[in-house]
Length: 343
Ligand code: UT7
Image 1 (cartoon, rainbow, N blue to C red):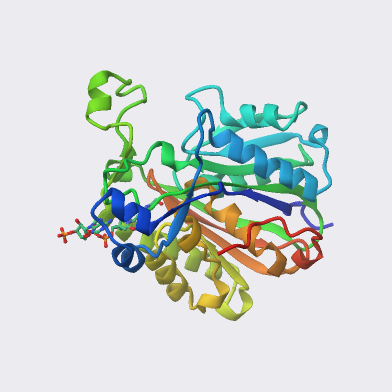
Image 2 (tube, protein in one colour):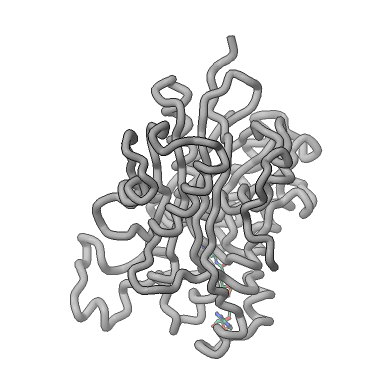
């Protein structure tokens, strides 16, 4: 009998309604649609508006949709892992809040933070709980309300990020599908280039930290860009080599959506045409932990059983990695088209 694998058996997603366009941003800071499109490739991003609305509200919407689409009751869920950089609170874990909001009561849950690689790391972690035979239904939800830590007076970072959530169901399979391999890496030396200075135990919040705007994203764009370009491509090419996957055998690259130039460089190194690359950065920007599941959500209808996918990400830490999986079902068989197709 073949080894048990973890397969993605459904996808849910949620993006807030409000669209923050480049036009609106250019009235907030000294920037332009032309600069943002050329340097980053983003046209608009979604923003979660409203008092008392948090990451868990978007995640709960994605999870509810996932339960509906996979015909699963909340009681059947064994484990929920939330990939997140912007938790609702420092504690408890956002996974617990999402479970409460979706009436998942028989599961345990925890958060996983690996910067923009959070979803990738969480998916690999979750797959181990299935492969060992411990659990049958595991949800991995990637969600971030990046607008809660973006400084909308800093033109170097405010065009990049958006809010959103995506969730996948993982279940065991003995078929030749599912998560086959992962390469996950991190190097803490990179933390100086991308972090939030205050709010943690190193610098608890004070009036001074607020005045110094230290509760927002701090990013040195160029070193992050250089590392991202080389590391995301390195691990993706290594994955192809490990599994003798020539570019014609690979149906899809699912890249983290941080910058169109990083996505293109990765695809080029892999020898992939752009039509094999999932790209929605122009509409959602960088939703951090939600980029990969939101791609799967949008492309679900085009995915076929047996398709070879490589997922790749790079983020704060630094963290990076790739996952090779074979898609487990024909996406066009999914009855309801639940995602927002509007451009
Ligand atoms: O997902 C987490 C990982 N994060 C990333 O992968 C982000 C990686 N980094 C990047 O994507 C890019 O470095 C950025 C998009 C952040 C910046 O692009 P860049 O091509 O590296 O620009 P730069 O920082 O070198 O800035 C070039 C110029 C500067 O002006 P001077 O010094 O040449 O006069 C900036 O002040 O562009 C200026 N600039 C802007 N101009 C108009 C920076 N931001 C803006 C802006 N609008 N929004």
